[in-house]
Length: 400
Image 1 (tube, rainbow, N blue to C red):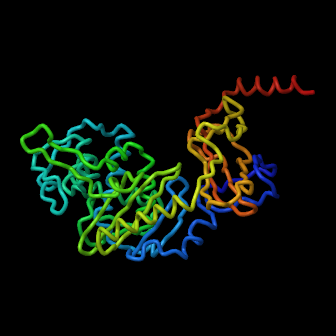
Image 2 (image 1 turned 180 degrees about the vertical axis):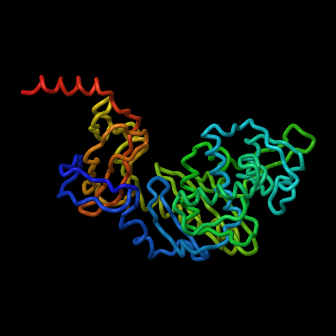
Image 3 (image 1 turned 60 degrees about the vertical axis):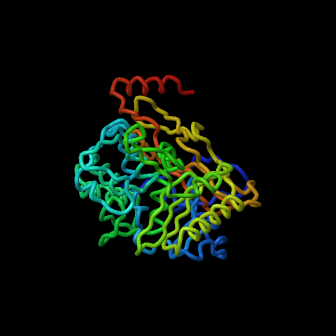
C-alpha cells in the first residue's frame, strides 16, 4: 500500500489541554498503557493454560496469559465456522430459510452432535442453533458443505479469513475442532475472531439462548441446552462458544455486556468446567468493575470535511460509521483525553467508497491511546472536463 502523505497543515479537532503529539502507529491499533500492564499483577485465570481478556468495543487487551501459545482450540473452532456463516448471510449468499442437506460424511461426525441423519434437511437457521447451542460437529460440516461445496474447501476459506484478520497463531484443519494434525489457535486469535463475530448482531440470537428445540413438531424433537452455562448464570452473558477434547481440556470464548461495555474472555486448557466458568466470570467482573468507556464520536457524527480534487463534488463529509471510543480505568480524568483528525494531503477523484482517507488519533496527554482509520462513506467519481472547466471559471470570477 502506498504510504500516505499527510498535510503540513493538519485538520485538528481537540478536546482537553496540552500540545499535540505526532500521530504514530498502525490504524486501529490499541496503544493504551492500561491495556494490560495494570491488570497483569492480578492473575485472573490461574487454572488456565492460556487466557486473554479484551474489551470488544476497542480491542483493548486488559489481561493476558500465554495468549499467543498455539494450542488445540477444540470446539471454539466453530467461532470461525459461525463467522463465515453469518458473513454469507449478511452478503446475501445464504438465507436463513435455505435448506441444508446432510451428507453421509457430515452425519458421521462423532463427539457433540445434533444427530443428523444422512439425507436429512434443516434450514440454515436450525443448523446455526445446532452449532451455537449444542456444538454440533455434524451441523458444522453440513453448513460448511452448503457454503463451500466441501469441508476442505470451507477450511480453505477459514484459513484465508484468519489470514485476513491478521491472525498469526492459527491454522485450521477442520470446521468443528475435532482433534486433527496441524489444527491450532491461540487465546489472542480466538478473541480477535470472537470480536469480529460479535460485529454481526444476529449471532447473539443463537449464542445467547439457553434452550430451544430442533425437530419440534416431529416425532423426534431434540431439546437444545446451551453448553455455555454462563448464558444462564452470569448477568449480561450472551455467548459465545465452549470446547473440550482430552488434549485441549476445557476451553471457552465468552462474551458479556454491561453498562455500555462488552467483554470477550478466552480461556484454554482449564482443568474442569467449574474452574473455567468461575475464572471467566472473574475476568468479566474485573473489566466491569475497573473500566469505563469514553466516547469520542457516536455513529453518524460528522468528523471532518475532505477536499477532493477533480471530483463530481469538491468536498465530502467524513462521518463516523461506528462508535469511536477509548477504554479508561475508572478514576482517570476524562479532561486529559483529546483527539486529532489527520487527513491525506491531496485526494484526487475517483474516490472509492470505503477508501482510507485519514485517521482519528486519540491521546491522553502526549500518549497515543487509539488510532481509527477514516474512510470515505461514498464513492466520488471523477468529474468531466466541462464540469471542471465551469468550476475553474467560476472560481476565477468569484475571487476578491
